[in-house]
Length: 156
Ligand SMILES: Cc1cc2nc3c(=O)[nH]c(=O)nc-3n(C[C@H](O)[C@H](O)[C@H](O)COP(=O)(O)O)c2cc1C
Image (cartoon, rainbow, N blue to C red; front, side, top):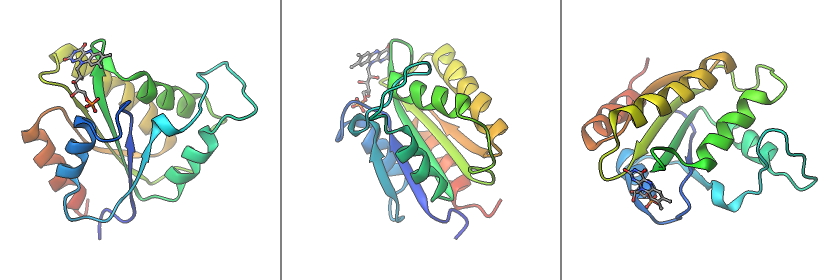
């Protein structure tokens, strides 16, 4: 299968909210592993906690072929959890551990503003490509979610 092992990273505060519903629609019928960032203790860039769990999340990403990051809109941007993950990925000592992974991103609310979507997607692009991952698509509504599903299943 083109998508290989799929990891869904839920960046919502909720384990059963709209972000998870979106992911279930996107990944309907596919096997996937899921992690809820709310279960992980991760400091933002510059913080150095002995019990930091970013590397656990990172290892899950390494073990996947396709990574789907899903976030709600909070304060007109992605959640702090999603942003923190991107920040930590960007500032981790760079290696090629994630090279070749396919990456998909969605952001949802009852109607995200274009600026919100544009800015969030730019943040994702900024992190994904330098790590050697390929952004196969992004979505911020159900139509784009259906297109993202096609991209997930495509061999490209
Ligand atoms: C703290 C907070 C801030 C939010 N800020 C925005 C916002 O700025 N713009 C927006 O469209 N929706 C905003 N929302 C609405 C959520 O994006 C929306 O309810 C989303 O579907 C929640 O996803 P979830 O169920 O996975 O948490 C906010 C919700 C919360 C809890």
